[in-house]
Image 1: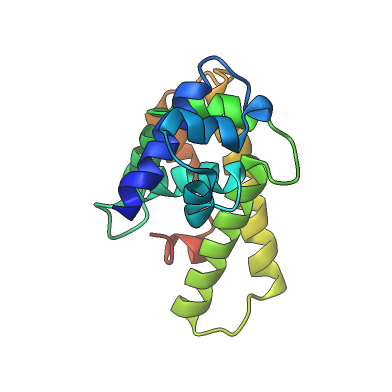
Image 2: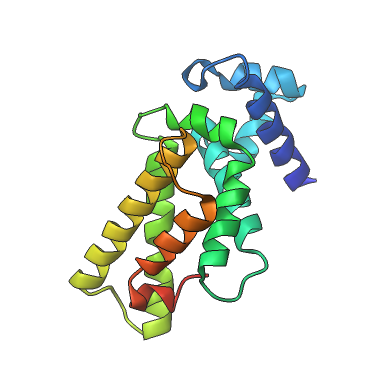
Length: 177
């Protein structure tokens, strides 16, 4: 039941974004459109940014679900999964506040990579060169995804996925997914 409620809020937010900019969406209106009390929303999410982050995580999980190792095919699957909600991501990416989806995805990717590196290499923390390489890679892939979202890249999804995979640091390829 808990996931159904979250999915209802997610679906309703996506529908609202068809007619309202993200910055104008209020939790009270979202709840009215879901026929739910605001407290129900706050039982699941801190705010609308947390809801957007949850949507991203669900899309990401669907993308990596069938893969055991990092590959250009896995990158392609995640990208395709995110692009199923292209309009949604275009609209929420326009928000540049402290809680923006861009900041969330960046932090999510850093956290995921850091956890996997520490686990795989039995480290308590990342070495400076590892952290810089991870950040560099994530900044690049996120910038390319944003360009892809707004149709500013002249490359096929397959070509982009291969490009990103080939430029992933070897130590990172071993731990992702």
